[in-house]
Length: 178
Image (tube, rainbow, N blue to C red; front, side):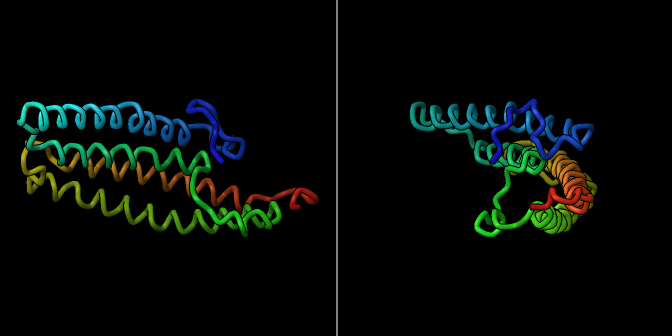
């Protein structure tokens, strides 16, 4: 459903093409153009060192997992903005325009609950992780910046879901609900 280039707003997202959409695209860019290439480079170097030089990076898996987390979490708000999520088209295609908007609002409400819990827990853990010095075992890399990024991304996702709920309950002119 989503074939819009990174810089274009999808047709159903024009109403939120402001700050939330820019934050979503920026986070997606960080994940797609920084974290994923970094992960690919890390895996390539680790494979070369492991199988050619017999000297693997001991911390490669930990850093790779964190980069994968950043790539995934950074793209969630943009995926929501562009409508790239999975839905049951078997039922969805049979709904009227109003029914589709209502179904989108209900799914956004469920997503809002999940994203809110994720944001709350992530921010709640940042202080504890910082105080305790929680981090990777094999490299001096603290976890708290990743938890903070997860919380920020989940917060932007919450805003996306709130906008989707608003669109779902917006008044649709008569005759446009078929």
